[in-house]
Length: 467
Ligand SMILES: *Cc1c(COP(=O)(O)O)cnc(C)c1O
Image 1 (spheres, rainbow, N blue to C red):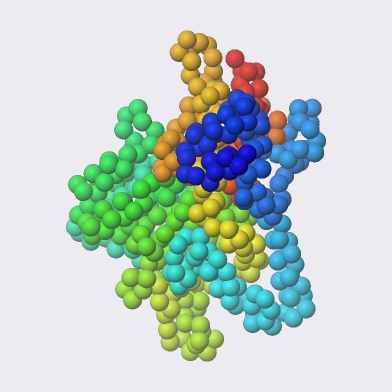
Image 2 (image 1 turned 90 degrees about the vertical axis):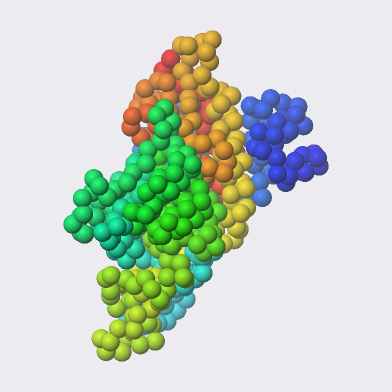
């Protein structure tokens, strides 16, 4: 068994690791023993206990006849809504008690003085996205932050007036950009420069993105891409896009909703101009949680907020109420209102868990976990040219590890709606998108290799029903 441990800590590809384990255990790579072994050796396994994992019996679509009542569900929907850290309730209680006991004095007393609530946890967030503390603010919702940032970074001129984005950006991002252009009285047809995958392809090629920047860069004011594409799961080459855009004089920003807490980020070192993200997906802060925004230090003296509230005023003199603005530099000047302490509590509980490990270690497990899922899908459900009647699964997420996070997007040769219903009846939580995509996201914080193995078993029985 000692040899095996060596294999796991080495930098072998997921397939190599899986094959080595199976050969040492003298079983098939498809055997559940492999999953059990991987779980046993998982150094991050202890983190799972910090979360509430829903039971199958409590999920509304479950059919009790098809599940064991005390089993945990297979939760592969952390890309949509992360699970609840157990400590949230305690942290909420702390602040509710404080409010009950001391009322207004809570603003400047206790473990999380409300007036500084966001600032108490900002460093925990900075570690996750690879930025300096003063480059980040925790405020508002994601779409609000995107608007606030665009108001300052998108300053169209007669030569430079376009915004470059993905053709299938998340609706909120698409609408935000469209409405920003309309605020400036610009023609959205002419000013929204959107890139689509090549015909017959599902994801974007970096070379094609760079070619657009090269060709159109002089007329592009802002490049706004997602870090990880919500639908395909593609992780974009953030550094290459940033470098190419900035070389052409564009501002380059990223919506990191599906990247934060999922892949390693180094926003400062990569020199990204601005970014924003939500905290209820991989960051587990609960629906509508406190969002994040980032502006690189290089812009601290030059990029100012278009809209200002009292929280953008420097802390030292904020409460003198003299109405002579002393604006905090950078992103902190963009804060408008006093922070919502109850949202700070839930985010706090989650960020603490992330800070008990590192994104590097989480990512290492994630690569193996998703690699294992990919391997089993390919082994069980690939198209069989000799058996054209057999239903099959295609993975549209890039197979290259450097081009994806934990999510895989699957498409099916059979109608997906009835299949999805069968999965749900059996206690699988994942996400279906019309017309025929299933998005599954094994999350390294709380998902196990056995979860992946069970998912494959359930998927197999659901597909059998729809031959
Ligand atoms: C989840 C998500 C959103 C949601 O926006 P909210 O303002 O948090 O409701 C927006 N954009 C992207 C890319 C997302 O993934």
